[in-house]
Amino acid sequence: MADKLIYLDNNATTRVDDSVLEAMLPFLKEEYANPSSMYEFAKHSSNAIKEARVKVKEFFNAQNEREILFTSCGSESANTAIRGVLNMNKSKKHIITSKVEHPCVLNLYQTLEKQGYNVDYIGVNSVGELDLEELSEAVNDDTALVSIMYANNETGVINPIQKISEIIKKKNPQTKFFVDAVQVAGKIPIDVQSLGVDLMGISGHKFHAPKGVGALYINSKTVITPLIIGGHQERGRRAGTENVPYIVGLGAACDVARDHLKYEATEVKRLRDKLENGILKNIYNARLNTGIASRVPNTTNIGFEYVEGELILLHLSDMGICASSGSACTSGSLEPSHVLRAMNVPFTAIHGSIRFSLSKYTTEKEIDYVNSVLPGIIEKIRDLSPYQEELAALKKQKSL
Ligand code: PLP
Image (cartoon, rainbow, N blue to C red):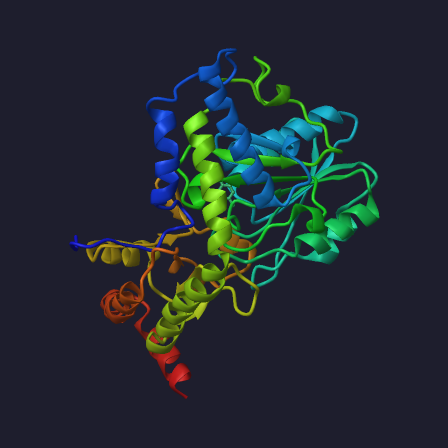
C-alpha cells in the first residue's frame, strides 16, 4: 500500500468536512440535553435542530421547515417515502420505478411486488438515460407512486426530474413522485419547487456530513405514515430521540455544499474530465460507458474491455488508489452491475467497468498520478488476458 491515499470513491461515502465536525462537537460534549425536555438547557438542543431544519429547507429550496423530516440515511428516506405514501393510499396497487435504482428502492419494490403490488420497472438506453416514453405509457389511474433517482450512483447520469414530474402529473395528478436525490446533493443545485416533486431523499455521508443522518423532503400536500412509531418527534412522522449532533452536522454540510456548488461545476468537473480524457487517450481498450449523457460533475464510469474490474481495483489499491466497480459479489459469483446490464454495456466491457468519483478534496496531483499509473496497470492485466486476439484487433481498430 502506498503512503498516501488517493480517494476516488466519493459516491460510496465522503470525508467529513472539518467545519461540519466543528459544528457537531458541542452537541457530542456539553450540549447533551434531550431536545424534548422542558428546561432551558434543552432549548440549546431544540434550537440547534430548528436551525438545522432551516438550513436543510434552504438546501432543498422547500417552502417551509415543516416539509423537512430528519432520517438516519438515504435508505431510510426512501423507505419512509415509499412505504409512507403507499400506506396512505392502500386502494391503489400500481407503482413505477426504474431498472437502475439503488437497492434501497429496487429491493423494496421487489418486496412490494411480492406483497401484491403491480410494478413497472422502466428501462434506460445505452448511455443510461431513462426511457421517458415507456414511463409515460406506464402511468395510469391506478398508479399510486413513481420513484425515480435524480442521478445514478454508478454512472452519475442525471434524470430530467422536472420533465418526469410533468409527464407523471399530466397522466395522473394524484400519483405521488419520490426522487432519490442522494447522488446529486452537493453536486448540482436542488430546487424541489421548480422540479415539482412530492418527496425527495438525501443522505449526509455523501456530501461531507457523517454517516447516520439523512433527510426527506415531503411537500405540504403529501401525507405519509411513519416508518418508526413511538414518541411525537418529527411531528409524529419519525419516533425516537433526535440525533442532535448529526442533525446539526447535516445542516452545516448543507450550508457548506451550497457554497461549493460552483467549485463542483468547474474545478471538480475539470479534474474529472482530465482523468477521463487521460484514460481514454492513453488506454486503447477503454470506453466511456455513459457516452454523451448528462452527468453529475464528479463521476466517470469507464469500461476496460477484456479486463477484470476486480483485478484493476486490487492493483489500484496496492498503489493507494480507491475506486469502485459496479459489480456486487453475490454468493461467491461475480455478477455484473444491474445498472450496466440495463444499459446493455457489451459483455467485453461490463466486467471491467470502474467508477471513479471525485470530491472537492481531490487534487490535480492525484489525478495526474492516477493517469500516470493506470495505463501500466491495464497493460499488465491485459497481458494475462485469454483474449489476446480480440485485444490485438481492438488495438488495430483504434489506431486506424
Ligand atoms: N440512493 C443512492 C442513489 C445511493 O447511492 C445510496 C448509497 O450509496 C443510497 C440511496 C443509500 O444511502 P445510505 O447509504 O445513506 O442509506
